[in-house]
Amino acid sequence: MIVMLCHIAPNEKEVCIPMTPSPQIYYKSKQSCNDASIIKKEEMKKIAEQNNLLVTGVFSDCIKSEGDQA
Image 1 (spheres, one colour):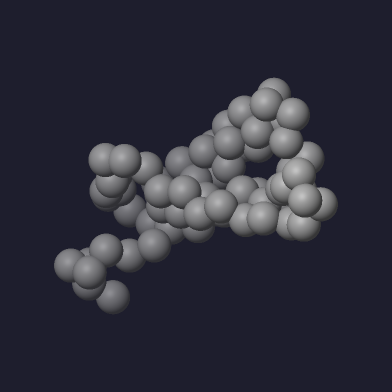
Image 2 (spheres, one colour):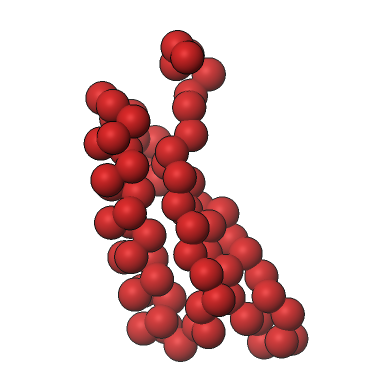
């Protein structure tokens, strides 16, 4: 899973920060990962706003590990 949090930095430019869980989490299905990524996206947005970041967007998606089959 990857979450991309975009916000306005002090220099007034938009900055996007990619974040992945550490340690990495492996999901049994694409659907379970998608469900978790939606929850994580909302959590990250809330945390950023609580820390007074001007959030411009939060995006999340599931990524395949190198060992995954298509």
